[in-house]
Length: 189
Image (cartoon, rainbow, N blue to C red):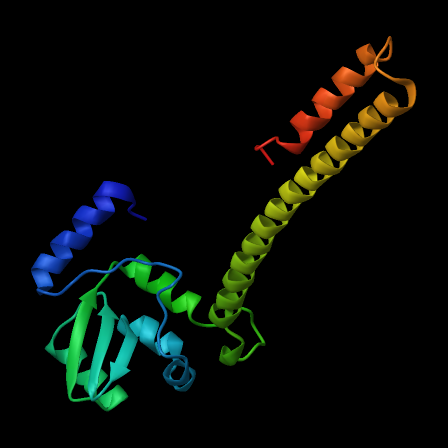
């Protein structure tokens, strides 16, 4: 399997050779599900093509060896008038096809991973969003706790000042009052 710069150079060379854009495997690369359920994915793998999009009598097809014979076969199979090719490497085409079909024996093709992968990705995004909110709420809870503690310190300091006066207890009252004021006005939370 080619990777990195070598793969990119090979894809560019194929793109220039066939005069069409190149594409490589990505998990987000899917075909129309309703159409894929009707097609034989094993046959598509053998023929070396995959339907990426079919719309308004036009098909966008990923192929390893695009040409007039394959275009005619695609027209006949998909019932379209025009075929637009995107070229890819054989190993990428196999991964694209495998990603769009079920690999577990005994399961129907409708039990494909792609819809489940989309749901998994969506739920992972939601989980990250909720984790972010939880962090923000935790910071605000900590800030409220600091404010409550600061107000309690101020109240205790003023109560001591009122009950026992400002004599020797001032050494206890002043730090308590000062730390309470700092806690109430702390801008970090």
